Amino acid sequence: MASSLQSRFSYILLRLLAIVGILFLLERSSEHLLRSQESYHLSEGGYGLKAIAYRDGSMFHSLRRFVGSRTKSKAIVAASLSGDNTTWIKEHLPEWEANVYGTVVMNDAGANLTVAKNKGNEASAYLTYLITHYHNLPHYMVFIHAKRYQWHNDDPMYDHVPIIRNLRLAHVEKAGYTSLRCTWEPDPKSDDGLFAIRAAYSTAFQQLFPSTNLPEKIGHPCCAQFAVSRARVVRNPVHHYEKVRQWVWETDLPAVRSGRVLEYMWHMLFGEAAVDCEGPKECFCQKFGHCDLTCDESSCEGRYHLPSWNESLPERWPEEGQGKNGWPVDRWWEAGRWE
Image (cartoon, rainbow, N blue to C red; front, side, top):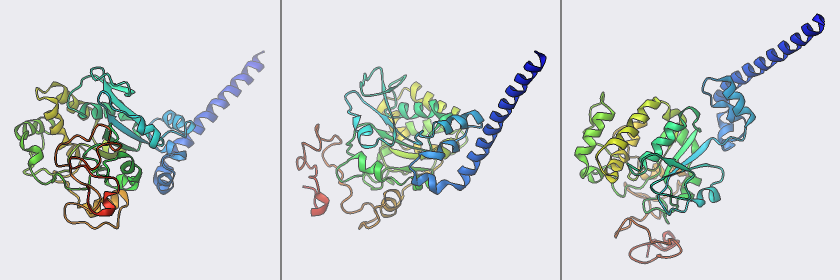
């Protein structure tokens, strides 16, 4: 009997040692992959062995990622309003993990996630995602407004789909953070975007960046839609994002103003210079692969037309509204004019 128990104990001990050895090898493999397999990972679109390259220091975390090797390493974070149709994300971009945030107040049936407070426009959704997923972030994240068509989308027909499809993840990897806009309309170097909130911006900046002097000049493309890498996000500790969200939730500023403050602060939050205004020709080429464009210092031909009459696309765009009230018609870039 004693001999039998001793044999069983030895067998179990050997099994445990074997499992620990496998976990150790997987942990070492993740480090090797992260250093030496980056080109393979990018071409594979985030699937396969790259799954074990994202680590939080836990061998068990690496094993879980290895077993679930189909884990997507890129995510869309969309801030949704009531009535927004968000089915386009999974329909046209199925390779991206969709995180659609609404609120109980908004009662958005299309949202699969919620935020506790409906304040700061898109800021509550963006910050809630970063805080909730901080220790398990995908490699690439795109933060957008949830409707497919937006007047500020840098596409000839204001469509999110080609923008995200054409986004070069190698550029996001290299840059760390990048706006989804290239056109300087509205002009990112002017003070127009900050004029009405200058005092509020100054106060918020001092609260959120107490050890940094307020820059004399701030410049960045409008509209709070951007891509960022995991490596850039985790340069800040999670409590910094919690601090920013707490400011959003507690400030007396109305949502439109607190959201505007963050609109011209996201790039600095992720480590970019106060004036971050890439030239449109270089921007379209490096971010989206559109390298044969004719451009001036503010825009490129056939890429974007700034609406002149308001900031709301027609209700059923692009099926309705083309060629009316200053809105373009499809293929307008081929004719060189938008009406």
